[in-house]
Length: 216
Image 1 (cartoon, helix red, strand yellow):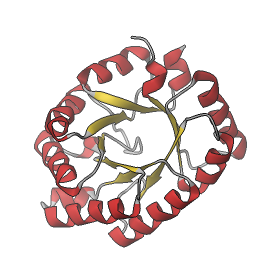
Image 2 (image 1 turned 135 degrees about the vertical axis):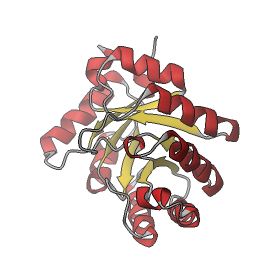
Image 3 (image 1 turned 90 degrees about the vertical axis):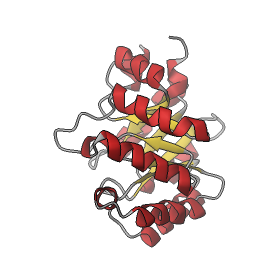
Image 4 (image 1 turned 90 degrees about the horizontal axis):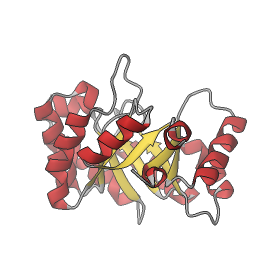
């Protein structure tokens, strides 16, 4: 498969990432012409500054990694990120609310953040490692109802989690694509073979810290 770089959001979300690590990420993104970079909210301005004029998207995470912040807090965090220049927002769903079948809460949570995003795309991280197939499907349906732009598999922060699985991506794609939403696969994507399988299953984005290795 050609143009794998155009699927990749080059990702660095480690707690101990240094300024030097971030600059290296941005330079690699420019060198390999990745679609975007995904970084924590504190570094959106830095990313925007270093990637100015490149067309590389600046993506950040909200309510990360647990998703259990109040909707109003997530919305404020998203608004600040957009103001700093974030092109896309990846928010973590409230997993407990999905488990409790508190669907009105989930819809409100997503809509509240969406209202703060302006023209920036909103992706909703489902944390598929913690959900069964029925819950994944329901979460996708709620994302459609709430007006999200993408559904996303994982934060990559679940202990002993697998991350993006082909069968989960396929289920997500089949559920949301008729409604115009897209799928981002993330978590545990470390080689070209896995990347291609996830794209074939329906992912139009790949969030990975192994982007350089994958394209090489």
